Image 1: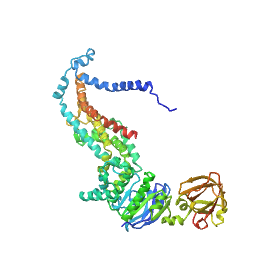
Image 2: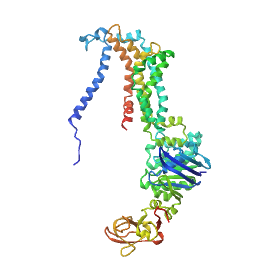
Image 3: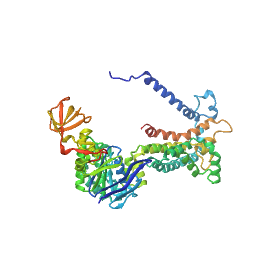
Image 4: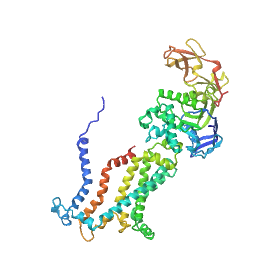
Length: 277
Length: 333
């Protein structure tokens, strides 16, 4: 008798329910933030105006007029774009070398790189601040790009390494026989073949750069301050300005949510490909 | 030109020596086949010639020049891989033209040379397809095309037919043979299939555990195997080996007799046994004989069809001039 897997009641009703609950749990804070951003600061703290209130654009208008939103946004774009580019420029050759010409130390190097992510950022706060100030790099784009690249390189190299590993070694060797230089091999063979993985890595690094707050808040004041700094600056020591804070936050995460939305297929594919296959 | 010389070449992976010191010369224009069981080091040897694997010690000379430190592309050799190793993101035309583009040859000449190669390999209709849209045989032809456009000093083939089905394999075997006849370029071909070795080579190099057991023409290996290993490896079905008193009669520790060199009778003969499985191929019959008291099983090959049943009593007589004698070390006497 053939064995037929029965569709259990759980997989028919239970699973979608669990998925929806989890999905809503993740979505709720964003929803709440966007909702609050359309309230006045006074309405934002009144329980009776929890759902019913008169929406206002005041917070958003305020933000562009009084807080120079566009300057922060520009800094975020500049630092995230350049840091992502720099991460890939360094990370691709690095992952290529480890994937196709591994040495005895390759595994250890990979582990060591990952271990740097285990170090609490606060542990190096003092040396970092001291170094950047004495080098005269405090609050510069260059510094933020450098720091964002460095903290994202380990994860980028790990991801790229995993994707590159999936390219058959024969193809790389065929390239060597056919007379490709190392750079040529990366350009002509590696990048076209690992394009999906590289795009997913770039996207993820970009998101991480955009969202980074620990260092961008502490190593900038005005010139290189990103949207994270803008949110931080609106944390309102002088009182509770939830409406304003929510608007700033929504405007800061907005672009990245939109980007993620459009690239979700690419992201999911890129993130699961290496893990499953 | 393509004369390849290996001088005292060794290869170790960590503490494990996979190729002990080895010397070998492949003359210009030869079709040399490296054959041996899997893990015998034949692919490693080929990859060392290609430059894809470093030598632990020793030297490789190509046309009299030391090539040990020369990167793969500058050795003037072309390689065809078992997995074809085509560039999946390029069309057939781009794949074949790739080595020429890397050599910075003018586009017009690339186009012309790609077309010439494609014509000779029957690939004209597929030039604008990607490898994924081709059959295994076509992919293999593209890989060969990519090798021939370079006009290399020698071709290296690493088990190129093992991913193809049996019928296609025979066809491609002939095509590669034809190619060698036409180009007269040195070819080094790695396989574990002794039939491929016998049918294609002018020189067979039999390897076991990184050691060359024998080098010779196919018929030399068939008629005068230097030791038991080569005797058992070359020829299909395998040679029968008999030890003990029967071998001592011939002043040998072991005697070997090929299945096709044994006469069969149902009434009388030198050795008596019982028929096990009989394989009827039409042109030949392979009979596996048990209970001879000489070896677990002896195989005989009879031309044409012969009607024997499982359990029949059968008599075998080895042809006296076809008995191979080996000493206790397995070396030919």
